[in-house]
Length: 239
Image (cartoon, rainbow, N blue to C red; front, side, top):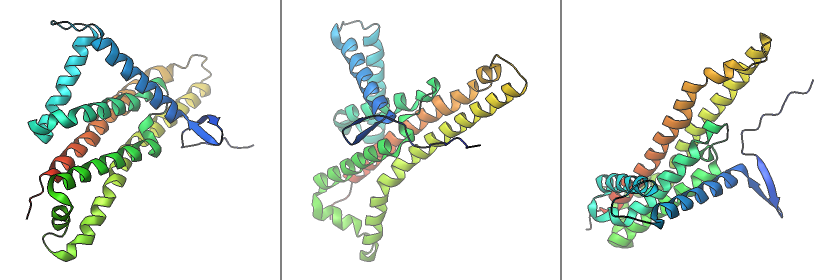
């Protein structure tokens, strides 16, 4: 009897020529559309006293600006809050897809690593822009010159660790929930029940943790690390 093949990677939905379009790409596009539609509805007929979508939008924007101001300072919040808010919303929504039995987009390295690379480039671009390339190179050679290659290696590992952190946590949760449903299905079949009541009640608290709390926490950590490293890089002392 042939054993079923279990694939950990995202499913390929269709091809465009020789390019495979995975479920991660489709979900990411769908989430982007949802964010754009919400932004349009929230700003279409703005009133002095907000309500509905505008009220929710203003609450989210205010929350993001406050988080960015606390992490990066009030001066930088105006510049970086839009990107941080978009990143946080995108990851939070995309990582909660497990509630609907779908694969979270952050459980795919093709999603998390590119965003980590973007954060890496932004961090070092702003550091060099604030203190010149020479000043930043001096910082990497502190407190001793022989430390320079280790500091460079540490910086180069940042996008890897940043992308792997959220990927590992979300993939682990996805695997746990998949195995749980499989085990509960076997249990239901074992007692000969036609109603999958085990799959209905038991997974709910696990969904709340693995598909709501954990994704939200990991998205917050991803954005917070990006903000802290960007702020710290821009605060390098000049010599």
